[in-house]
Image 1: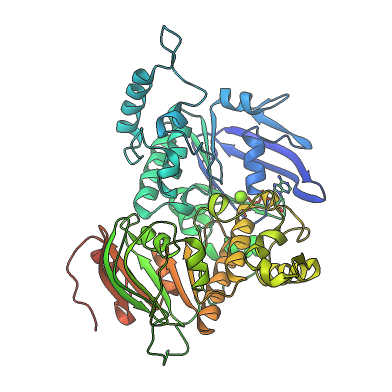
Image 2: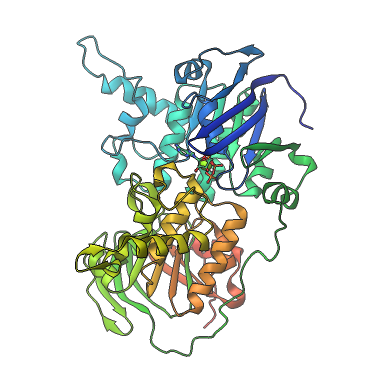
Length: 506
Ligand SMILES: Nc1ncnc2c1ncn2[C@@H]1O[C@H](COP(=O)(O)OP(=O)(O)OP(=O)(O)O)[C@@H](O)[C@H]1O
Ligand SMILES: [Mg+2]
């Protein structure tokens, strides 16, 4: 077991229900001083609900919370803040139209003697903090909505760290971070721990749990299953405890049918968009084609351009014919579908039901003479929910009520329901649990076997190597090479990603 330091925070017999859903059932759990404690469990196990209770955002229906052995009465978010509890919640909660600086200073603004906001002083304070603690965060004067999701996540982490903390809670912070940012975060966590801060860390990537945590607690269906020292357990045991199943074959096989078709599903000729410049490539039906390397090298711009979100130059050929893609509508009409990494902002309508979200792209198929056929809508949504094992009471459940991983599944269903010819996914397994991740990989292979071209942009290199038939690697906007066959190796991918010379296969 972990060194057995004194307990910092303890929750006892916590119950929390949302309507008929019992998210936490009589849960007891504790975090010691100066420990990194991981929390794992399947989608919907209750992890984020526990985070919200510990950080005072949600009130439990029943149960007690103790801090350094003392019971906290009328616990709320203010008490949590005063105790030095800082949480990075699962969904990014920044204000889009404000700058990085304004977001970081929200609620702790400095005011000058004239009563106006003292931007100069705030900037000075933040600059020295950023320099010493988190140099990777984006420039302070950038507007948040102009940042990619990884930079936004770094701002959220910076906000939690800025005023010092005794307990840092990180709810799936790495789901959208690249290796570099993740390493930066982990060195911050190690430094905090050495300085006496405790950290509660949630991730579906079990290798991260073993990299950073002293102990790990497994939740299942709102109940505490086990707390183990990470030195005394392994991934297989954790998966068994989380799901009651074994991880069998993890990644699906390579493309079964070698495509006989000579016409690419999509071809780019002299394609430039945002940071990516002069890209020429062909992607065939039945292929899973990845874009890898360091993030922010042009690959995200490329897929956003292909979905008509940002303008491009050069030609896009679909099934051998030039198709002008100048809007999202034209991309959808060309049979392109896109799963954004930013599901809450760009994919889902949170205040609508699962059913409405899934069926949104096919309303024309589900209505007759302008009248919606709700029975058809229900049947399609129920079918997709079953296929992806979405955990919810009914198709009528609002998407805002779902756990993070289940939201991701709805986002995937929405992009598949229209039966695209080209499916593009950005961080497709963001926030989904281990078992579901491999179910999604298998589904992607099935989809490709049906003749769809699948394009995946992911910061998770093992994921790309595991599922893709070919992987294109970018460096500063240029396509440096396409890995396939025996060349699909992490060392070769990283060499290309760092602009080193590699002899490529034909
Ligand atoms: N505001 C809410 N209203 C209704 N149900 C909710 C609400 N928040 C959570 N739930 C339900 O409580 C259960 C636990 O959800 P929670 O978000 O804690 O899961 P999680 O372990 O964090 O999952 P994930 O790995 O997908 O993030 C789920 O069934 C979820 O649908
Ligand atoms: Mg969660």
